[in-house]
Image (tube, one colour):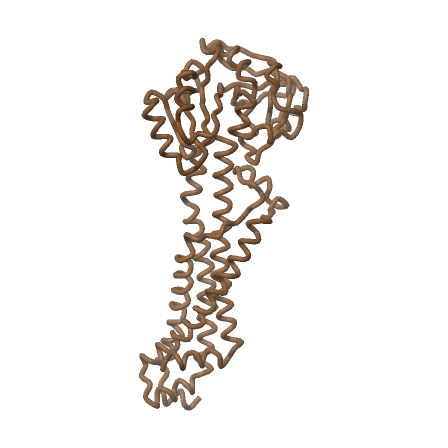
Length: 403
């Protein structure tokens, strides 16, 4: 009886009913779209970290990362043989790495010098595709160097410019080498562009005095899901080396991924508060407009509990009609923008790149959070209906009938 009466009451004032349904749908849409944006941003950031920055896994001498001493090298032949027999590995790049100073006629800057083999490096970090000016390193030219656009602008360098790199060799002697800019690259992570330069590994090794060896092995896997399994396998094979995943090599990214739900919850909470006030206002108006009617129902024998349930039922019906609408709008919107993207470069490209994010966002529908959002929206609607319901049951029949 209550449900039938509630259904009829819902459609007595279609405008008000549509306002509540639209409020619920918009609240659900806003919550899902915010989560979709965050998930899309985090997915792109993780892919950038893996595919272009630190790869899935890295192998180092356990003491190398402490102060980047060139003496702490890897047994390259032993590692290569083992990795070739390990399943799930897509590409491998050996790197010689040292910290040094880049000096030009306009000034100097601290940089990380990466000695690479261009062909293998491109398979792991897609370095060739990042080059904006000039060309990739030529293995036959020993003094070529790739620098980031941010660093080039800072040091006023261009293609063909000369510079000097100063660093220490394995004997702790200060050494220096002259290089000529062969290419300028640019990624979406400007801080990395500013402090990383690339030279041929054979050239850097000759300066460091370490010959045919390396300090770092970057490993790209065929599947993200194999990360922990491959790491465990390599740890068993190389207990004397440090083997770290992208989460350990880029802890700030892992932190952002792990806390994104917290940020989303705060924003969703704000949206739900706004939704609650809208529902309270609309349902309270409904109760006030029907004061005489509620008084009459009470006078005819409808107890306060049934009046309370009646108002809650009306809100529940409106909410359950608004939820599917909100989900559908969210689904189509996110599906559309996941293909065309949302370009925010006009007002935040520099800010986004300073944190390693692309300015083109591709949202992802948050299937995992869908049930949680639906429960939150429905709970918010029902809690919001409590105040109007309590207002209704406090009406005295005699007073209500006089109005």
